[in-house]
Image 1 (cartoon, rainbow, N blue to C red):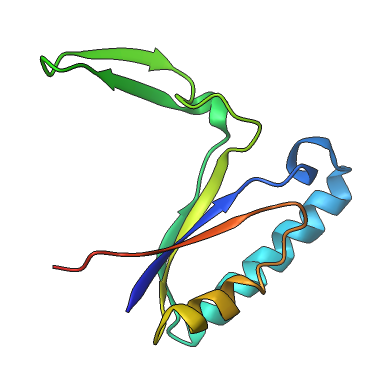
Image 2 (cartoon, rainbow, N blue to C red):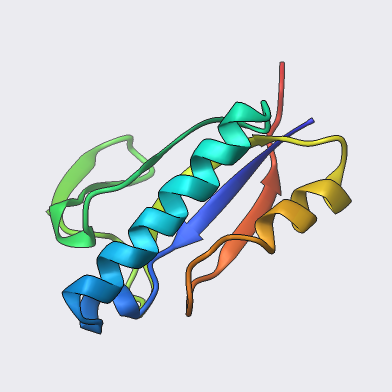
Length: 114
């Protein structure tokens, strides 16, 4: 079964010293590569920072307004996502618990497969 791991940016990404950020990014890269080599991480990407986002706001008449920046007003933002192949939710949660980023959140959500 496939699960999406929605990975939020940690505080350390905006406020931490550069050497600490690079160390954590390296750990995340190693974590990702290990899961990929095991056939568990089957897709996903790191995202550019929130200020690079462009949002379409759609109304009931299917008209769209383009807005620069992320749509949601929140202290947290999505830093990336992964598509995980796991036997079940328990395995997905076990893997998600190992995400090596301090002060981040990992949302685990089943993917609808058609």
